[in-house]
Length: 159
View 1 (spheres, rainbow, N blue to C red):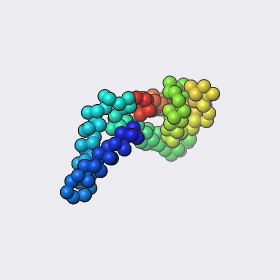
View 2: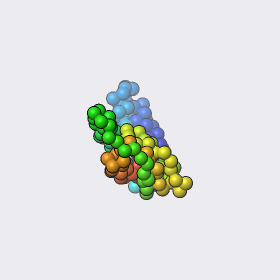
View 3: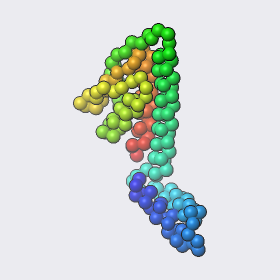
View 4: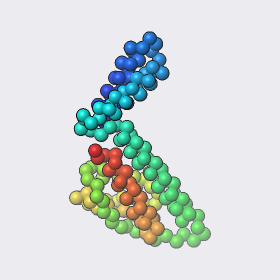
C-alpha cells in the first residue's frame, strides 16, 4: 500500500512539473490521473488497491465513533439514575482474528468504548477477558460491537 501511495504522489508531481505552472491544482489533477492509472494497473499487483483500504479504515473509524457514542449514552444513563443499579463483572469473549495487529486493534477498540476494559488476552490470542460495568447490558453491547469491529478490522488488514 505504501508503494502505491508513493507511486501516486510521484505521478502527481511528475504531472505538475510537466505543466506550465506549478500549482496545487495541477498537482491535484496529476494525483487524480495517478489514481486512475493505479486503479487500471491494480490487477498486476499482489496488494489491494490503497483507496479500498482507505475506505475500510474510514468505515472502521465510523463504526468506532458510533459504538463510542452509543456506549457513552448507556454509561451516562446508568450513572445518572437515582439509585445506581449495576452489576460489574468479568466475562470471556472469543475472537476469530489472527495476528498481533488485529488482536491489539480489537482490544484497543473494545477498551476505548466506555464501560468495558480488556483485562487480559489468552496466550493463544483467541479469548479476551473483559471487565464490564454492567454485565447484562454492556456485555451484550460489547458482543454486538465485537462482531462489527471484527468484520471491519478484517477488511482493513487482510487482502
